[in-house]
Image 1 (cartoon, rainbow, N blue to C red):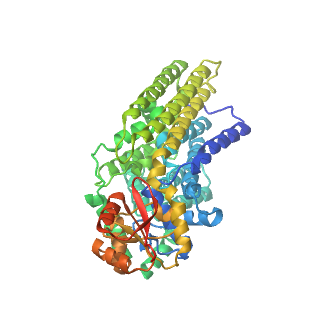
Image 2: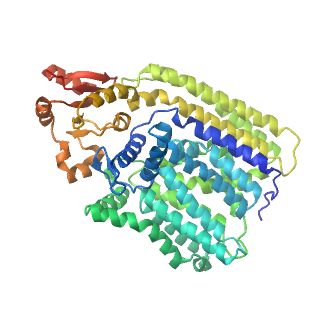
Image 3: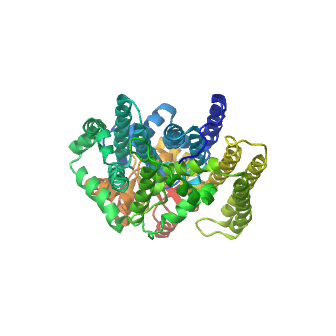
Length: 563
């Protein structure tokens, strides 16, 4: 039986203050870091080009057709740019909004499906898990996907509550189907395949066959295809090559083969989850054990079983894939937070003491470990950057330590069964939210160099005084951030990188060899080129006429000198 306290003495004003405080911490740092390659620069540039060209159907990257992913996030980013202009925080706003909304959604769902205490703690756990809050501050597709998949799961849980009026069940199931459609428009078929597979597995594990009668399959599929079908039909009509590349190459070969060169061992995601839920890690086993004992609802539905099947299947699905990235398992974070939240209110004062002391020691270890960075460095990232980052990491550990010790002090205060776990949980969560925020902000010491943003003003000034049709070559490298920062696409030279499909479809838009580039450079009246430092040195040795307009330790931007 679920013996989590059902009453939580938090006023509406207190809840709103907590949400406001989280919003300040969540949204304020969005523009404090430069965009990182490759995802952040890529998706920002795709949205910039969509807005600039007015083509909302055919996604392009650096001027080339780019069909690796559907366009929902590109649409959202382009609308953000239209409303607020171009910039780093604007590029991250959609991702941050979906991450923040995911916190509120899991809190709402926990309160409605279980009880008020579970809802509060679920929101705290998810917001303060490094995995969720860090991914919510990078312009990648996986946070948006994870939010829509979370809404799919939560809408299903909310729809299956016992004694719910039939029209409410239907409405929540339509939300579920609509969320699946938006998940598909976020990243492809996994938005449908993963929830569908989870539902099938759940019915076998829980033997809950009656659930299928409450899914509103016919009207739900109408909602689903009404949202999904228009873009797929339009993009296929305008680009006959779309179907094969998007569905066969990107959706199936990407998963089944190592063609994407993103390998990883089967246990790749184990350390991701251990670090990603670090402040709650020590209660994970007890949480699962407690949640598993939760009885079914009177209508036979088992929400905990569904959440555990969701978590296990998606984790194993991506563990078995030949293509792995840290963010792939992010959709399992919300149900994990909900499972942990069911247990936290039951922890005794002694348990919280041990928990908080343990994480205070972890914060001390972060501070001590930061000094290792003083001895790091290489040609790409010199020691000076690591020394600067060490200060941020040490400060992050110190903030985490102070916040955790505050929770320890609050745990010793007078408490009741309803209020006992609230104060230490919020203090610990805040400590680790701030720890991740400070360390993540400090990473910009590397991000500034990676982005090449300091070069952009000089390059944009050169572009402004040259004719509009002046070619801008990218020689031997695809710089994922430079097109966005200089507000200009580039012509690829020699390498295709991830633009191979677009170049294959429009081969006239690229230069196949360095020799071809040299010939064009000599005949062009005006031209710009970006290249690695080593390539620039080679051209200098060959006597190729070039005038440097901007450079750093990784890249050089040159202009064709005028007679």
